[in-house]
Image 1 (tube, helix red, strand yellow):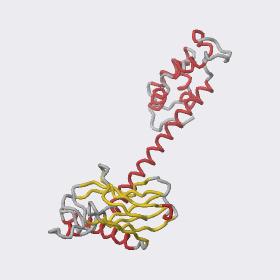
Image 2 (tube, helix red, strand yellow):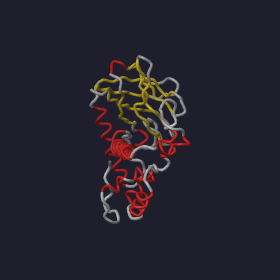
Image 3 (cartoon, helix red, strand yellow):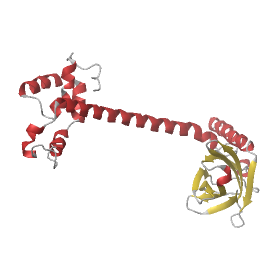
Image 4 (cartoon, one colour):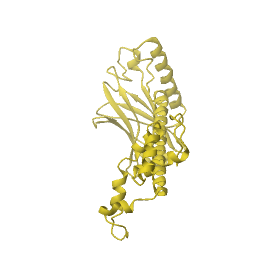
Length: 264
């Protein structure tokens, strides 16, 4: 069973801590229950364990009345209560489940941190800033240059321009052990808009490579009045598809409008 919490009030013996399961199930005699209650008044760990085990006795009493168990009915459940050894195993199970929950929470936090750290370096436009302060602009420019530099390292490329939307896109690919690294250069797209690059496999499956927002001034507009609007958007991402398994790519708005399709 899990050990007691350090720093508890008093110095009870280990057996007193182990009594919490039996107390929760109501299988102590009057003298044992009174002794444990005196210990419980000064032990934070046992109080927490008792709270975790609250309500377990009725559940076990009901289980004792299942057909074919050979145990007394619920009305006689006092004589069918589990032994202290079973109570100890139940406490152990509760403690293990709490530990598993803490581990899952840690992994979720770690994954979120990785996304926060990695995301801005890959999903940014090479536009020379976003109109914020000098510090923000310098950081955005550096990240945007990183995205473009990574895009330039990928030699396998396909391009297309949609005849209706006039949006142009070049998709660069690089096969990896985990799938395909993918970058897109996007031009002649107006904002404000939210878009995604979708990889469509030859088997019909669809994977979102990356998503981004287009500000109201747009990207890659040849007749724009500002440099940031004239510069294209560079976005990096990836898909689990092997490169040869990709049929085509689609740049889609969040509302479901296809801006351009690029055949692989």
